[in-house]
Each structure stands twice: as structure tokens, then as C-alpha cells.
Length: 430
Image (tube, rainbow, N blue to C red; front, side, top):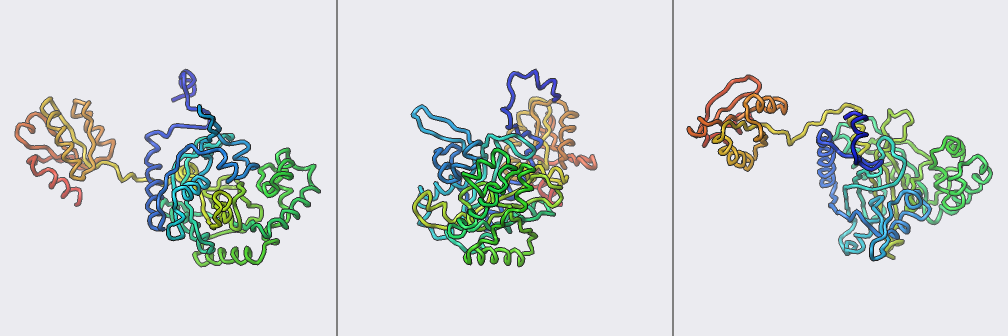
């Protein structure tokens, strides 16, 4: 549809949101299928949380001075004066569900995953929408660095199944409550001496959330961040040993990574490991495909239980955009192998029941009951790349037979209707 014709429409999708059209659905089906299968292999169980959550959950969990809370949440007040938000991320919601529903009594680690939309009011750009889609994985209840590495392994496993190669992990450690205050002091001192060169947002962050200074995307702030003190130089022994363990596991898995001293992620709950995975060939474009890390203090913050955890989120929109850019072919397993052609009133009537029988037998079948001519229906079958067309007309309905047409060779054969399921399955198998 042209822009001119679009402008004539009275209603359009809200800015930053879009329709996922039928032509794109095979990509989404494939990605979701791979995520579900991979989650099962790695021992994760699915959890679905509401799209609406209490506003305070994210103020407390994500951080009052993060961009998500300050700028990006969709807020609403109900008739009962409840303050709710459209969820801007999954982790606090999953932890809320873990605590509320007694999952903390299960054997640990508890491994949960979720998939669905998130909502953030930000400037729309390629791969970033105001309604976007994520898959989220959380491992709750253990501190072992092998779990941090295994989550990265899980993401690379998903990408391998999708045909995505040439990826690189950016990784850092931002310490814990013991060593981070010392680093924060060094960082604040450095940035105060460079305060005049900072953007207005970073001048505010210097007072409220100094670690976020390293995450700014403004060119002048990036150049200042390059000379900033590095977190890994201030780690306590516990954090240093944990980070060393994560890197050793990644080496063993032969997962490519680079140390990024400016990687802090934008959320207050992270401790120790933080990571993102990027395509290698993006020439500096901001396109992290997944991101996450360890958050050992979030559960205590939300529920008074001191339970460690680690997790990450996958941006499905960006994954699908990259699949398209790299022209990776996605074959839909739901594509039909048989097309049922019906002719005449009697043929149509008998085809309705036959369609149901073929479907229940496990055959992937398509048809177009509103089309009357054989030419139109065979053209549709050809367009769908269907191997066999079954033709049921007046004569065949009376004779209790059906014509099987090979769409590649064009050859046709009359088969008794009672034998059609067995015969078609045999031909498809060949």
C-alpha cells in the first residue's frame, strides 16, 4: 500500500506499533518454535504473567532513576484508583509471580521462561518499537557462575537453530553491594571533573545513578566514558572470582566474547555479570539481540528473601529483522502438502466432510471452497507449492472416487475415496 493511500485511512496503528502481517508470520512461528524447544531442552518451564502490573513493582524493582521508569512506562489509573503500567520488561513481573505463588518452595534452581509483548514509550527506530516482543529466561536460586555462562550458551544454541552466525558476546562485571560503592566513588570523581562536557541527561545521572553515565549513547558522552575508571579494576575477590569463572566457562564452550568495560545495562537490579550479544558485522549500529545478567539482590528487595538469580531477554523483533537482512530462508512446517479441489454442488457438499477426515488423519491440507473453477483452484495449489491436488467433482462424488493430481508432473489417477488417506500418505512418504 502506498503512503498516499495510507494517508486516506481514518485509523492507523499507534506510532511505534505495527501489525505483524501474514507474510511475516512464518518468521515469528519459527522463532517461537525454536525458543520453546530450546527452553525445554535446557530445563525451563513456561510462565505467563499479566501485561498489566502494579507501577510500584517496577519503580522498586527496575529502579526509580532508570530510563524505563522515568521516561518509558505506559501508566494508567483504574476506576478504583489503582496505579498500573503496561509491563516494560519481564524480570520483576516473573519474580513477583515466583514469590506470590509459592515457587520459592520448589527445588532450586527454579528455571522459568516467558514470551510475549512489552511496552516502552521511546523514540521508534529500526528493531525497537513501543510494543515489542521478548523471550525472557530466569534461573532463580543459585550463584554458580556456570549458570551465567549456560544462559549465553542457550542464546547461541537458539541462534544456531535459526541459522544466525557471526555473533559476539559483550560482557562485563559491575560488582556487588560490597565493591560497587568504592567504584561509584571513583566514577563520580572522574565525571565531576568532566561535567561540562556531559549531555543534560548525564548531568542529572551524575547525581542520581552514576553507573548509567557509562551507558549514554550521545557521542560526546561516549568519548568521556572511554577514559572512565573500569569496573573490573574495583571488584572484590568474590566478584572477581565469579567473573573469572564465567569467562573460563565461555572459553570451554568456545563462545566468542569481548570485555566491554562500559557495559552496565540500564537497570538497577544487576550485580556481577552483565552481557549482551551482538552481530559481528553491524559496523557500530546499536543492535544488541539479547541482554541480561545476574541480579542477586532483586528478590530480597521485592520479597525479603535473599535468593540469587540470573537471567536475560531476547529481542524477537531484532532477531527476525536480522534473519531477513541475512536472507535466511524460513520453511514453514505448517505448509500444506495436499489441496482439495471441489467442483459442483455435490462435490462441494462431499468435500466438506472429506476435508475434515483428511485433516483428522494428520495430513496438512488446504482448500478454497469459495472458488468454483478448477483452473482457479489449481492455480492456488500451485502458488502454495502443494505436491498433490485432490479433485472431487459431481461424477467422483457419485462414483465415490477422487482424482489425485501430481502438481509437478501433471499426471492424474482416479482412486477410490475409501483408500485416499492411505494412498496420499504413501505418496507423500515417497
